Length: 323
Image (tube, rainbow, N blue to C red; front, side, top):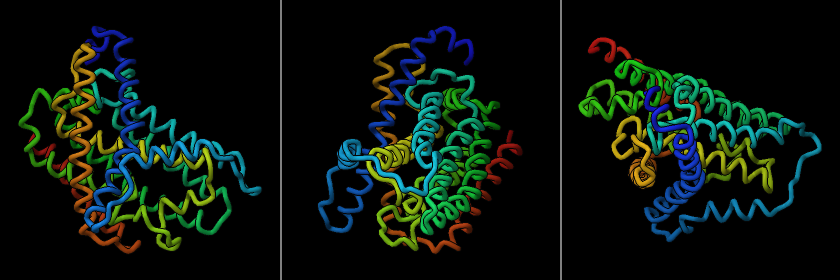
């Protein structure tokens, strides 16, 4: 892998990472719009167009910045930190190509840390506003994150045991070289665990309801009530990017076929199209399950996340036993 990076050149790696970043920046909001559209169709409504989140971001970018007099610099910096942390994770992760820039640093621990950094920044912003609902949302989000992040880390660790490396490009390349791994027990267990974690991290049903307007049931939305204008747009963009990134990461870790493994620009474009198709299929399946599922009570959410953590631990144990 390291030799491959030096062979294709730094410029090609930078180009692949930029393509990944553009794909997720545009694709994340479109995936959110697709989820809303699927739910609307299931309920017998037409629903907004799939591009509506992009239109909302454009509208918010043209509005005035409004801050509460009680907020500090944390409130203003948090949206930038959220978008920046997700952008770095996207740039170094193998989504379109197995040779992203700084691919040697794309360790699963680094990626999990970057995702957690964005969540912590948003939680601090919710506390910084000094409102009851902001503090409540931050508290709930950190409670869920404290259970979801270990499950995410352990589930990805199961994949690293099988590949013999915690480097994400190495894991993807090893899966391409050994397609039979897809049907292994540790892969199936870690796949279910990662889906549970992604659902909780992106605030989807049954963990959270992104379309609710009831403050007492909000989790992720409660932290952003005080934001408006361009800063609200940055928060929504960061959340959309994180949703697109996590679903794309799961799709590539378990179904990496189509990802570019060379320096051909046509391969990068084909990899982008295939990545989009895989992500859409995965998102559609998750949303169809969410439509038929009721939102869990807050005190039942730890049970779901604990189940995901147990599945991740079983995946690690199975990988060690069958190694």
